[in-house]
Image (cartoon, rainbow, N blue to C red):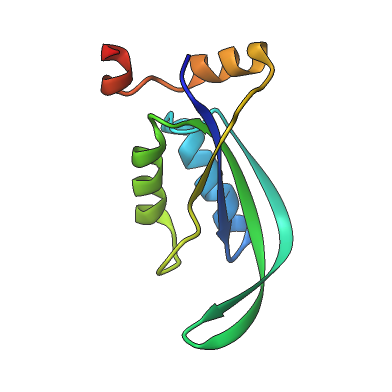
Length: 113
């Protein structure tokens, strides 16, 4: 079975988050993307404490797809350094994971193993 995961990615606007979510699902890089419209992020950027309102994407995908998904996010994302974090799913509902598997084509490397 393919290793499922969740990718976290923040954006500066809800509209940008929704655009990214739609593209990732349409392009077969994500089975589902949840968009959390508003959260507050605290971080250091260019030696200054920042406090920004952002939207969060919770992207359901697989490890074998992650390199392509991360590259696509970098291409589409407005941030110089976007948050792109893969969190492996240790266990999950088998029917949901099977549904995910049906939504996202396996990479060539995964098909060969």
